[in-house]
Length: 115
Image (tube, rainbow, N blue to C red; front, side):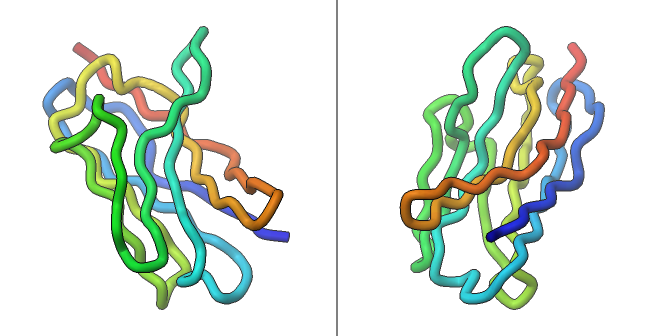
């Protein structure tokens, strides 16, 4: 069982920045893929970014160049730095990690970008 706890959401004006954190329970954190997803009102949950155990990263086209995912293995934490935020980035952001056939999710943190 893995527990994920997100923090760092809030309200920001367009063009501003926010940083999200996700703390994971359990051991061998460094071995696993960590990812961020988001879900806007009335829309399906969508992939935002992921980071592999070797540190390689992948981003959705909509956030490429503006968001940066990173991980702090000593703290079992994954981060999402969001810059140049747009109103369309408004969503609940979820931390995710796949472990075999099971996908674990955090409770989500709200990010609201005002125009």
